[in-house]
Length: 309
Image 1 (spheres, rainbow, N blue to C red):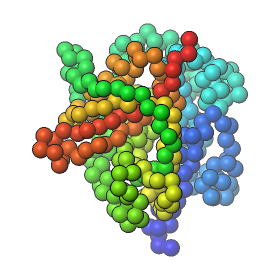
Image 2: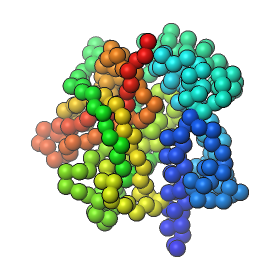
Image 3: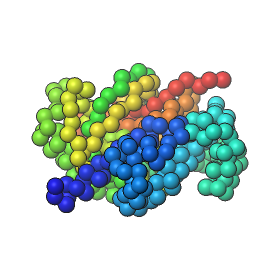
Image 4: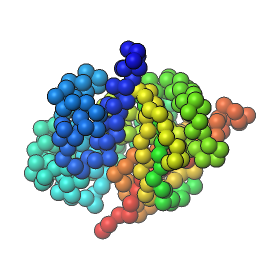
């Protein structure tokens, strides 16, 4: 195996661990479990993980849980501290509170109270797209609106290429990522007429995460009967099924951030739903560079569940 192929195989295995953690945040996971997912010896896995991601495994797991905790405390008022603790895999609220305070120097209750007090001036959820300055919102709070429908989505298999870094670097590398994904699709014959959706999945919430660590997966849905050959560039994962709010937009590309803000700040807050513990994504229905008007047809999927009072 060449040096490059070997490096790609290591990266593929680390991506598998990241995906596994995302779908099992509520479990107490051991080094043996992670190393088994990666297919590495437990005696070497921690060093391999840190060498590739430049972050110790324990720190990575704790960071992902703490960022999820911020989201739940800020946006899920229907969940108390104990609910959140169990959802994130802590044995009780006291253990969770200690971990949270050690990480953020404030208790979960203090953070929730402070966020609630200042939420009207809070971060716009579409900060991944810096093209729209915040000042534009002052006189025109929602310059983009769209039709919202509710969909119960079936679980899907997706093939993906992943970017880790700021959304500014993502924008620069986006075309190459897309080309790479389609090159793999043609090579492995998993493009099936009318059955593939092209989407971008955002694994980290820009309101709470560290920008240099943001993970974005550019994906194609693939019929479950097709076996995708993975390597360090191409991976597969499941797109979680369940209830989604789907925003249907026809916009210029520079207004994508406005569409996300409309979904979260206008529609969601008065919908009777709250965000579900999963990841939002965009589905691209047209190529704005092909259309003479440069209009992008875009569906935004936000995982939701009913508010329980």
